Amino acid sequence: MWLYPYQLYTRAIHISKINGLENILLSIDETKYNNMFGYYNEIKYLFTVEGLTEQIIKINACDDTKISLCIPTKNRFDDFLTRYLDEYVKYLQNGIIDEIVICDETGDDYSKIIAKYGSLINNDNKFKVYQNNEVLGVFKNKLKVCSLAKNDFIALIDSDNFADEDYFKTAKSYIEKNNLQPSNNFILAPSHAKPNFDYTKYNNVLVNKENMKHLFHDMTFQCCMNTGNYILNKSFVGSIKYNDSIMKQISACDVLYFNLLAFQQISSLTLHVVPNLHYTRVVHDDSEYLKTNHLCAEYRDNVIIPKFYNL
Image 1 (spheres, one colour):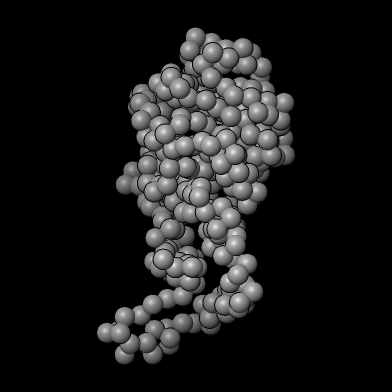
Image 2 (cartoon, one colour; image 1 turned 180 degrees about the vertical axis):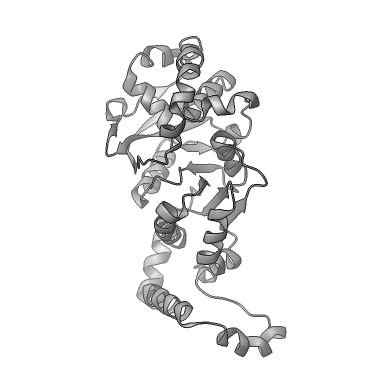
């Protein structure tokens, strides 16, 4: 067992290919060299005694609870993921998260992620990116990316939103403090989708079938049930059965529909609104919600929402 995962920062060459090393080095152009040198300056402290000690302590501090960061995406690299993934890779390297899994709908984000992070992806089985054979839609792409995670605990984060390291540390702490197990059926909901969606009045509330209809009268709670970016346990997510014929009607309320199905089908399910579990929610013109809400509003209001009162 390795004390520290240096495979994240190094590249191995089999002895049979050593004669090709010169060609490999000559193929590195100035841009690649400058990027590599800049990255070296960021990580070189890890090869000192102090740096190694600091990182081992960080990794082992939260080593018991391993979280897979799952990101469904479609045309989000240029505006969002090119910045967010730089941070998420650091979290991976520091042991804050244990895995990054991305499912791209069209291949555009896939090719750009491979171009920027290819060496890391090729050398580390904890950073995985997939291209779907067809456009699945928001709801099914989320289920797919979760299914590809190797860990029991999943952070399902939209590609246009950002969760900083405190989000993952808070989630781990809450799981461990409350002794939540992979066999438990739970959703950990953020108490604040910064800057505009504040659900802190529900801090420490455990939502179940029995109290759902009372809470659902509050529009703030309804909003909390549709903003997502949750921590989930993989086992129950993979068991959800859904109506494939209504995907276009629920694209703006896919999280609300998921929650309805989850509470209908999983009798023991609880949703926890977790204090200090925060992420940054970005509203923009290409938002799926803004583009499709007018198509989904009638189905949401007349079909989905009434069912929450009759769980």
